[in-house]
Length: 569
Image (cartoon, rainbow, N blue to C red):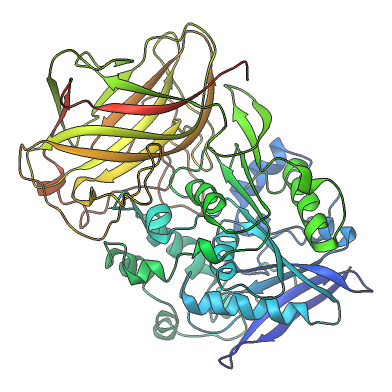
């Protein structure tokens, strides 16, 4: 393997970005490129030890067959890809690692940088002229952006657990500010900013200072990065700021493999599904899996799937990939996953079933005969409505939505909807999420003052809100709210029940297990991982701490729409 370190890539504005290149010693080969802020010289094992140790302990196939000395967070291991005939190019994004400049995550400038990197890589003497993009999270999110610009040499893209809509997927769930990105910026980006020099991480995989050789002072470092968390908070509606950091799906024509995570509520699922549905690509596939956010990208399962996809589109190998059905699912059971392929999403044969909320906190097939109402204090645990125990094994796989009639004692309210699974003894069953080890089945959110729907983009199973205006509530007046709940999958055994919790704050796991934590996140995990909605400026108690009333019955028919899948399909 030939390794070229810190190669300069010129940008159209005169800046130079730095890349490490791993390639076969001879010949021209297709390129797998990634561009992001996590520092190309920081070893996975050093920067993200908790994630690395968990992964290789449970999945020894990840580390087998590699010295692992070139492992880097959320990008491919060149020791496994170069022998397959690929050039691996890792670019430090502007202002991060060894690339000088201003850090401005997901900005139009970054998107243009990635475009320039693709076109540069395509004309290098070691390149076949075909460039693919591959990577997890950040390295997937910016693929949507650059593919919208249609770089001429971009020939395939694998978006692995990558959000898309900067407002709905990433920063404002249902219009409610999520504090994740402010905390992420502090823990995972500022720590590897260009200019930290010897003050940055001391262990490097390539012998170079991870954060460049320059030693910049605190004032200059601050000037060289945007105030990301406060910028997000300053844009509470879906305005130009968010549009500039979101893709134009209709302009994406690149062959696509979009891989999401059932446990990725809060960041790593909705965009993969919406992107698959929305792009104009003639060749596109949706894959959804489980386990931790970082795991399957590196396991034999994930790597071999990616290899088959890229071999077909970057090497023109007739390996049968193009004859695969477009939907590849790992349907979730209690303790395993069932591989399934389908022709479309939502799944063909879905039995859409509306279950109606009842005054005794049940979910039933018919609306209540009489009007009723139940109230809860928004700061509390809310109310959980549940089905009867299932008579037979029952599968729910697909998107979910709810239609709730509510009123508030104040001028606004936030709805936090949680789809849950309960065993025959009434104990909640949780799952390993993309980050949190005790995740429920699904989450949905909506700020009532953001209730306006875009009717042209809404479906019964995925309402779509405009998030462009503030519509305050009149206290104690009843309003109809349509709520998107992100997709889910579960095959529930006989005797188990599905529950829908209606709350005024983030879900918290009620079991006795201690909170988990990962060193790269600020908060201990209590059921939602790092995806908290607890910013006091966004959710003042005087407005969002009132009494919420749920209404039901033949007139105010509150309900949830579930995608039941026949088991004899």
